[in-house]
Length: 114
Length: 115
Image (cartoon, rainbow over all chains, first blue to last red; front, top):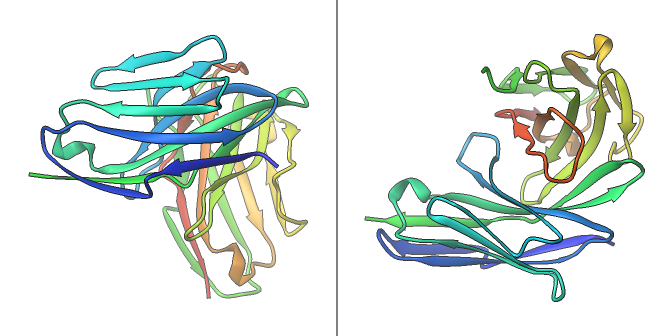
């Protein structure tokens, strides 16, 4: 069964600090891994997309890494801002039946305090 | 470019009633996806349209759920009759092409409450 586990479940940090969120997965056959940011009451917004051959991808202050051998990914947020408070969701897709079937993690809830 | 829109934003119905959710994808996006998040759980895939055809509907929970995309533009998801466990947030997403590295754009979701 395909699964995506994220840790920690929640995290509180001070503005300006860095943090790293973790994602472990058992999804096969692996196609791609995405990190999304979801603000309360809104739909998820894509931060990074990585395929099998990519091991790092940056988007501004967000940097994602992928280790396909250990099936782990991380999302590092640098110099956090109050607007970074949100849920961060790891999604791993398998290519099946001509489609890309995503498996979502439960997300890490990040709160940035001033 | 307008984003993915969903209607209604909220719906409260009684068990046994029928509800229809609508999704308007980004113009030109052939691929349309429906997802659902039940309280306290992760978002789960329901189905995937390519234009008007169902590419994959392996995530549809049962035959009380009917999704359509006539004409390959907007899509509807009908729940009939609704049950208590159908409560959750229903998301729609679209993408221009079907490929592993292509971004999906999500709508804001429809929050469904079944009483």
